[in-house]
Image (cartoon, rainbow, N blue to C red; front, side, top):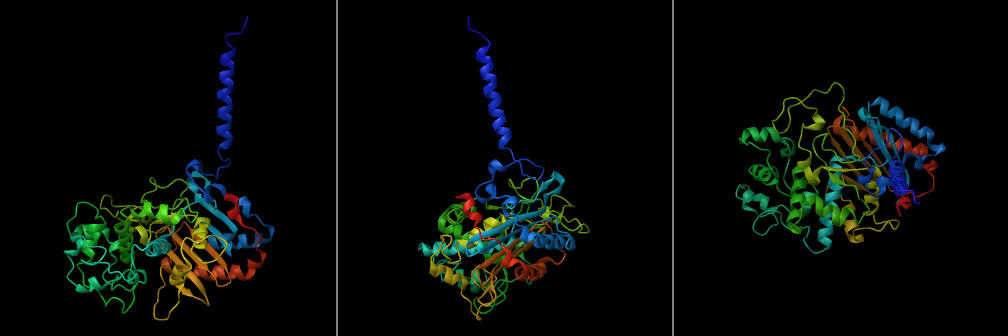
Length: 431
């Protein structure tokens, strides 16, 4: 006679095997992020152990000393040579409160490095014949012609601003009377707004002011100019900036885990770091007037509203992969034509800023930096083919000037340890 409980035993065993498989799939160790099922591409594969190298132990000691000196909770370093990822590690904490160690695939806000991503999107549209860099941005013959904001333009110089001038920070826009991207509370109070202004409302407010110089005749750094470029992308594609950039620029570059940041810790993306201010940094009113006391990095400013000017989050190795896709080198297939890469990196003393890059001096390299409350980002593509990227999750009291400190530190590391970098390509681990 058959045992009637036999089928139940088999069923229980099947369930047990499934549970074991699930448990084995969960990363072990307190430092691992438990949301890896939502992390894609390079970030889901790379581990700190993959970059272990006895010859670089002294460099890693120097990194920890650097972190201690500047009170940095966590950072990532990625080193690429001729499109091959040689090294990628996280140091310190991604989220100390949750005992999550920094991994090479932890994503962080990269602030104005976002402008390089936006510039690549504009160049892609130009290659596809959907715009020209000489196209006017505003006005009846321009790209942004919505009367919601054009009705507020009094300075006719706005109608002369071109796409290229925005890319180069030569559009006549300045922050002499305050950066509209970081004055949300002030604008709400001045214009009696009950809600945070969306990009159309913000633009309608910003264009009421006169330009500070004739477009193309000077240069001043402008975050608002890169918000306008984000809007240009939306207008020309009929899609949201983030969605179109992910589908047409980032994913073709092999970057699966780029996202626009949210403002609060609770809204962070899977695998995203916690951000930190220095211990003595005072609390500030929230950008939307809803609270009187918040950490500056979590509500002091509307980070998400920056869009292509400063809102992307990514990891150091995926940022390296992105650079490899727009550098003209043969190792990783480029997403842009050689002509577009040359346009973006052309160096001229007539222009302070290159297209998306801070600078592309052929003797020094291609530089792109970024700084926001709670984070800093440094990317340097050197003339000898090496690219060093350092991201941190802690605000430095030097603010944007911290980039110079990072640059000097990276230069020292290159002199001492470049020759000790192993010959390998960690990008092949995802292929």
